[in-house]
Length: 255
Image (tube, rainbow, N blue to C red; front, side):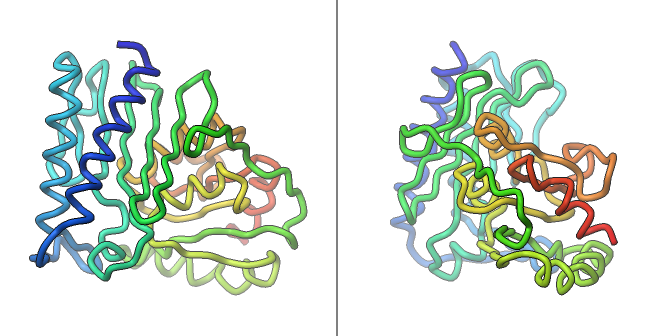
């Protein structure tokens, strides 16, 4: 199966899971950790997606937020069945289904679907990025005063939260405006689509940004570490930007 065919498979799986999520009944919510929740819909979505992907690609392995898996295999599907679970729980529309495919250690396919807005972001390595079938590119804004920055507070970890708090007001003073959607995958895709210039957050899981990474890079953007010299894939603390402003934003969040 080609990468394009895998992208099409992932889109079908995301839409099927979305149908189930959009018609769920009463939610039963469990706390995984402080400010971290899971519902039976997270588990049902992950199961549906896993069955669809591995049913078509039995040679691959699956790694999901809720059930884990093997990240060392040659071909790995990396899935967040609901990115933005709190939004989903509270009836807010900005939650996403995030599906990435990593081949021989490289993120090769990214699919992020937002059921509430019916936006399908897709990136295939070497083939570009699209939103609902139309090509997307990052913005070319190079002036921080014109920049919109999306942010996650890293509030599940005391050190990450403290570092974010420390840079929050200096950052606000230096840019045009700040946004927080509640879904890291949606935030990265917003940068890829040119709606914002950067997204920053610490302590993310690989399933939060794997799909968005492909989409961002194929749209001309770049993902750096929150701290200079760090590998964002290794740390989960990242700056996803349009490439032009990455250095400026990194300086602002590392005073």
